[in-house]
Length: 167
Image (cartoon, rainbow, N blue to C red; front, side, top):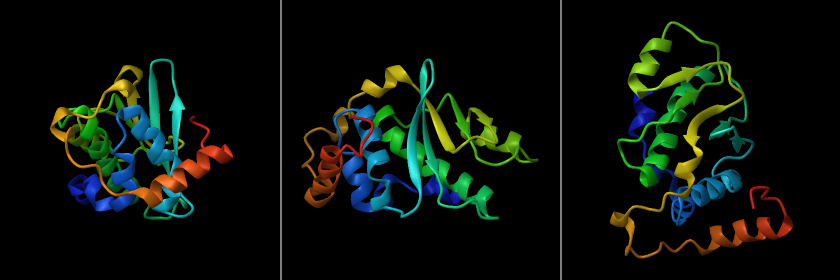
């Protein structure tokens, strides 16, 4: 949990850089979901619609015995990615974990400052729908656009093939 919380989108290279260069948070989520295999083969991401939220989920390739630690580690980078659009004080409405509730449940809720739901279909962050239109903060405006042409080409090819169901 602490290691994951120390990781930032920059630790994920061009994949996160491409995803985080979108104008809005919703577009960034669509990019990161559509291109997860550029980072990790076999895992997938999803955007699960709810009445007034979307749950951004990460489905690891396998549920290994270390799944609890892997899940707890994954939440930090996902939160930091969201915070690059929503601000460092942002917290999800709730967090979903893909393992059974255990003795550390209260500690996790305290650390992440929100409700934690267990036995979920994925590791996920619940995001209010109105936040999806949030634009990249002004502090990032005017920065040179990263050179990410190869990632863009792959993502555009997927959209043309219809593989990106979010467009």
